[in-house]
Length: 160
Image 1 (spheres, rainbow, N blue to C red):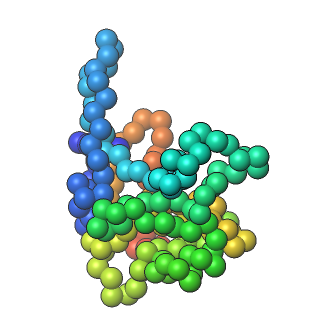
Image 2 (cartoon, rainbow, N blue to C red; image 1 turned 90 degrees about the horizontal axis):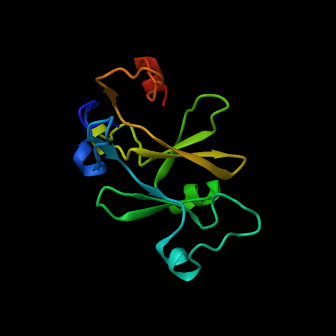
Image 3 (cartoon, one colour; image 1 turned 120 degrees about the vertical axis):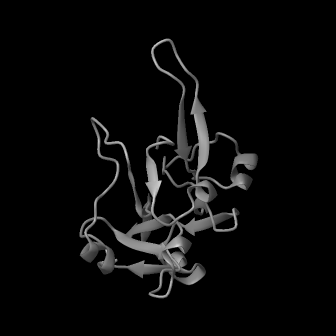
């Protein structure tokens, strides 16, 4: 997201995102972006078999995906729904049909919005099929060719 275009309602952008500057070119000025990272391999796997591809060509070759938690430490989102339920405090939430089952980190009715982990897990048929980035905010500058943010009505947010 362009730094001067992203607006977040309650989360601290600087806690979760990192600024990344793209150098100017002959035709474009330098630009600053907010970036956020998730990893598909553990540090240990990278050190053990750097670059080795499994025969099944699966996207998740390891135990799941890693994202940064509230303390800035890497946290595993397991690749199986059973492990998400039993080994984490991600909680099953309502979801939009055909978009997988959504699991949000420690989401309760008492949780303050500013304590929301911006990542959530998506599962289908017992397996992790994706992850999403979600927080309350918007882009202050409309984009010409693509809408990157879903727009939810109040009733949609309450349903989650």
